[in-house]
Length: 119
Length: 109
Image (cartoon, rainbow over all chains, first blue to last red; front, side):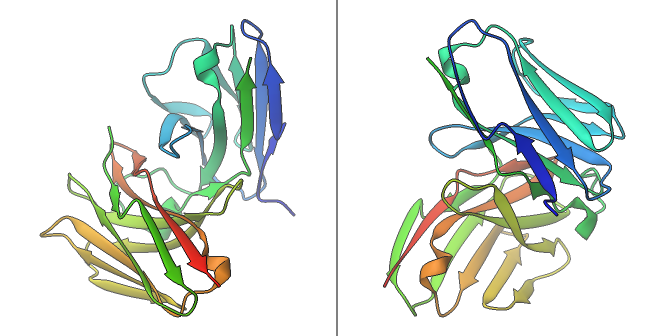
């Protein structure tokens, strides 16, 4: 009955490789996100999708490409991995996109994280 | 850019004491949220306070919001070892939540 799940939990790979992280939510939410958390615990938004439509695409290298096949899934593909990509990547979902409505629907639910280590 | 900034960066207290963490932000908000992250886990939502609210309670948690000072505080009363975690505030801007670096709270038995 996991609400937001991510696979894999750990990913160790060589520089230059291509890898994917999968995310699924069973909460029926409309919005999904990818975050990167660095070693100092700073959490930075990478992408958000609302009803399969890309809403936010922060200053992220185009080696990172999100794909949302349906509302319940948001996958992250990373090409040509670099040492600086090592971090924890979190998927999250919310019922509503943060749109200044101020409501509880904007609460975000996080997956357990994927720990990526690039060697 | 970083919107919410938590203070202190780290806090260590004895079990049973109260813990207070602060968050300052820069732009206008409609709500402010607090989340907890246990070591090696994802973030868990604790409480959401709207901009027209000044105080909100949930169990042992008490959150205040002062929009004139652009600041919020999270008070955890009667702390327990299980409260050991990092605590983040998040505020909204341009269709996203922006997060601070968190306060690391350690409860000593």
